[in-house]
Length: 170
Image (cartoon, rainbow, N blue to C red; front, side, top):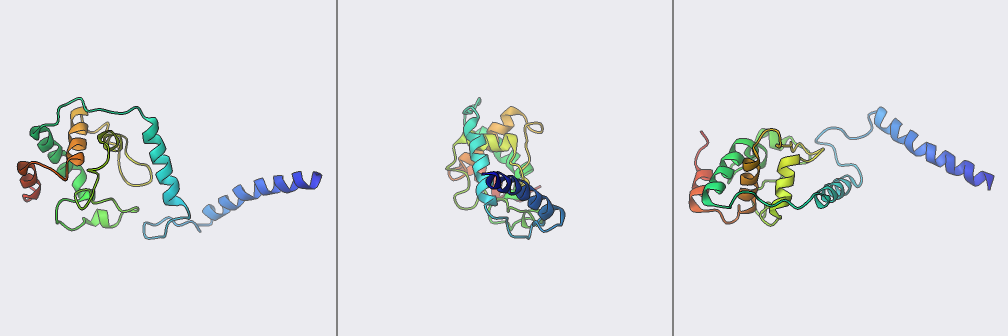
């Protein structure tokens, strides 16, 4: 029995020691072009989903109108488009160099099928280890909701909002 406890103790000590050496020697991938660690995506996704599920459900405090969607499009263009793209424009140099790559929110499915409260949480709080910043200290509460509404409705925007997005940036 004594050998079991000694073996268990050595095992418990060796795992953190190996982890420390692995990181300290520079063997862990640290560049954006390096392949992900085993289970990296699964662990990050699990943590993000658990944090969002734990947060109280958020509901907009402003009505979803064409004006609110237009203001959301303006916020998106000013703060989000550099990484998440607009229309048929190619990815920006910053977006091409990020790991994980930022999703192109206006291409394909985007986030239009996500609950608006989930999008609001991500815009407000950011997402660790992805490059997605938190905007709670940069945008007003109304702007956070407007851009969240815009993204939730991105597959069915009014023509004026679509026209604004497709117009050349100033």
